[in-house]
Image (cartoon, rainbow, N blue to C red; front, side, top):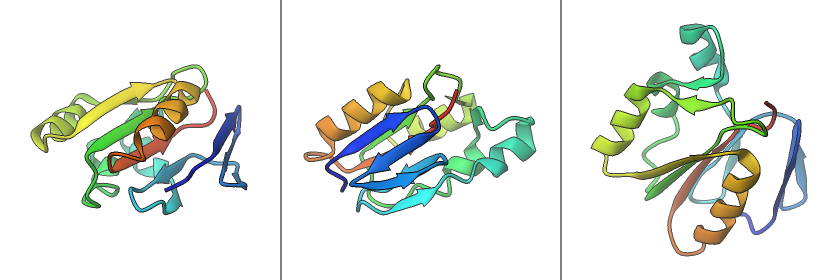
Length: 121
């Protein structure tokens, strides 16, 4: 799992590696590009995190899901996504990305955390 994460508008630096796109951090520390085109195709915007997108990230032993909603908080889970996470008995939180990063770093040493971080609006 990452030990340092810095975020500013349009970039996120994870353990010294800079990304200029939204990322998913899996419980094992693997970092991948967010598949936002799935949600964009369904809703016309990538600011809604659709169930069809989020299922691609689940199943890695996560106990907690942290959604970084962007610098201005524009990204949000759809109701179907929230229902799925609740049905799976997963704790989840939606926070502005800077706060979400702090929460991720705070709890990832003691819980298996899946992080989805939107790095712009």
